[in-house]
Length: 603
Image 1 (cartoon, rainbow, N blue to C red):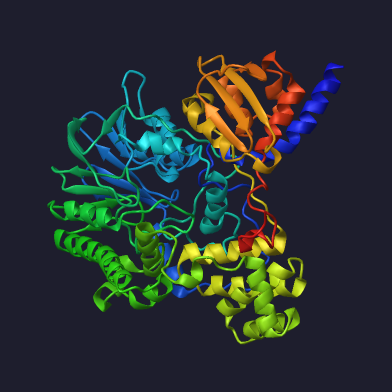
Image 2: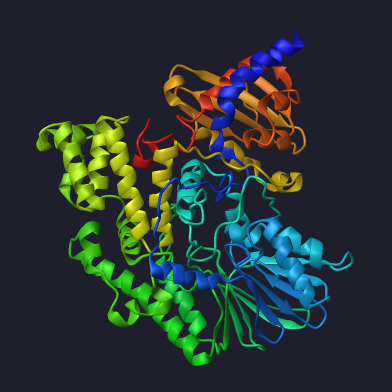
C-alpha cells in the first residue's frame, strides 16, 4: 500500500519535476551534456575570429614582480598577488574543477598561505571556483578574508530567479554550449564557458564588503577597492599603488564592451561605465590585469586604451540620445550610430563580444522602454495574423516559401530568415521551411565574427536540426544550497502559476521549514499566487519539511518521491499536495523543441 501511494505521488510530481526550472540551483549560465557534433558540413569561420583565439592561449603570465595572471583555463582570468606573508587571489573562475587547476599552478609560484580572495563582481565565471583556492592555497590556521561589493552576494543569490528559464536558454545559445570546436572557436572574452553536468561549484560568501571604496592592507600589500559600476552594478576595480597594477574586472577587455548582452540583462548604464573608466584614468597605472583577455603594460598605452574605450561608450550613448531626440526609431538609429574611424580601428573595440548596434538599441529601450514611437507598433497585428497577411501578399504560402528559397539561393540569408518566421508560423512542421531556416541560420553564423551572434545563430540551427532540449544543471554543496535565501525560492513560484487552471481556486498551503524556523503560505486565489512569509489562518494544507530538502526538490537535485518521504503533513496529504504543485508547472520546459523555440513562438 505504501509503495502504491508513492507510485501515485511520483506520477503526479513527475509531471511537475522537469518544469520547476525557474527555481533550479546554480545554473545561471550553465550548459548540459557534452559538446555535440554540430551536424553541419564545412563550417567556416572569419579569420579575425580565429586570430582572436590567441588572446586566450593558456598559461600563467607574470605581470610584474609578485603579480601573475592565469589565462585560458576558464572563461575568465584569475590573478595572484604575493605579499610579505601571504597570497591574494582576484577572481576564481567558474567551477571547482577550473579553480583546482589554477590554484595548483599558483602553488608552484609561492608556498605562502592564501590570505584573501577578492571578487570583482558576481558573474558565475568569477566566483564559483573559490573553494578550490581555499582548499589548495590556505593553511588551517590562516583565516581567508573574502572581499566583494556589498551587493555581490545579493546578485549571486539572484541565481534563483523567476527569469532563469529564459535567461538559461538564451545563455546556452549565446555561449554555444553544445557546439563542437568547428562551431565554437572562442567565446570572445575567453576560450569557452567550462561548465557541464559534472561541474562543482564553490562560492564562498564575502566576509568584508565595500560600499564606495575601501583601503586596506593584506599580507603587507596595500589595496584600494573601488566601486565601479559598468558591466555589472557591483563591479569593483582593485588598485595596487605600490606596484602600479590595476585589476579592472570586466570593465575593460580586448573587445567592444558588452554594453548589452543578448542573453538578456537589466539596463547597463553606459554613463556609469564611462565614469568608472574615468576613475581609472586618474591613476598612474603601469600594468592592467584584466579579468578577460591579456594584460596591458605601459602608462601611455594604458591611457590611450582607457580613453578610447571610454570615448567609444560615451559616443554610443551620446549619439543614440541625439537621434532619439530627433524622433528616430531604434532601427533607424543603428544606421546612424557608427564609431568614428579612430575608434572603429582600435584593437580593443573590435566587436568580438558586444556591438555598437546592440548597445544603441539598449540605450533606447533602457531609457524610453519598448515603444519605438511609431504608431504602427502601438498595437501590431498578432503574429499569426501578420503571417497570414504576408502570405496573402506573396500570393499564398507556396509563393511565400518560394521567395524564401529564392532568398537562400541568392545568399540573402537575413531575408530568408525573416521569411521563414512567417512560413513556420503558418506551417510549423513544414520541412522545406525548416531547412531554409537552418541554412540561413548556419550561413549567418558562419559569417559572424562576433561569437555571441555566431553561437546564437548556430545553436538555433542545431535546435532545429536535432530537436535539442536544454536541461538545467542543479549542483552545489549542501552548505551552498542552504545559503541561498528561501524567499527567492518561494517567490519564484508565483511566476510559474498556471493561472488558467486556478481561476476558480481559493487554496492556502502552509509550509513550515524545520531547519530554518521559517513559515510560509502559498495562497492561490483566482489565478494569482500570493506567497506570504508567515502561516495564514484557515489553511487547506500544512506540511513540515527541511528547507534544504525543499530547495533540492525544486532544484532537481533530489527527486520528488524522495522529497515527499521527508515531508510531515499536519493537514492534507501527499497526493493532494502533489496535485496542488502541478499548478506551478510552466507552460513548457525551456526551450521548446524546434522549430518554435528558435522563433520565440509557442504557448
